[in-house]
Image (cartoon, rainbow, N blue to C red; front, side, top):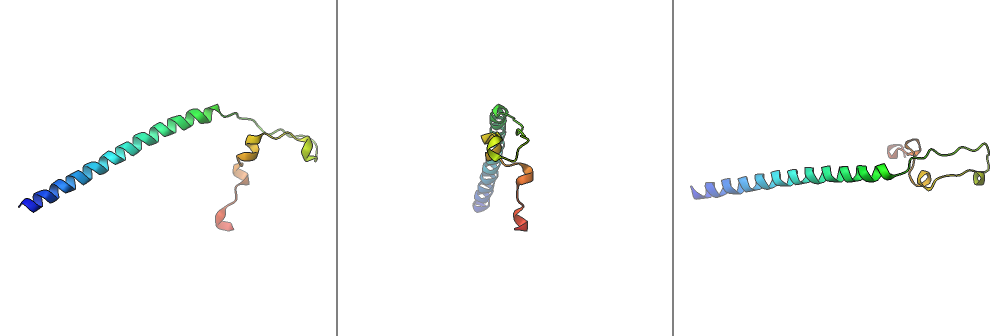
Length: 80
């Protein structure tokens, strides 16, 4: 009878550990989401300026616009 009791205790410990880790992961995700939202709200939102010229040096482009690709510029990796 004792081995069954040990298995039950081990199973309960595993389940409680799993439940604890799931709760911890959810809390960490919520905190990270809040912090990232705060940081994202600090980023400037600038529309790219359009100049009536084909000269690329006459156009002013924000470094954020260059580094952060537009959704229309993304390439679908499945088609490559």
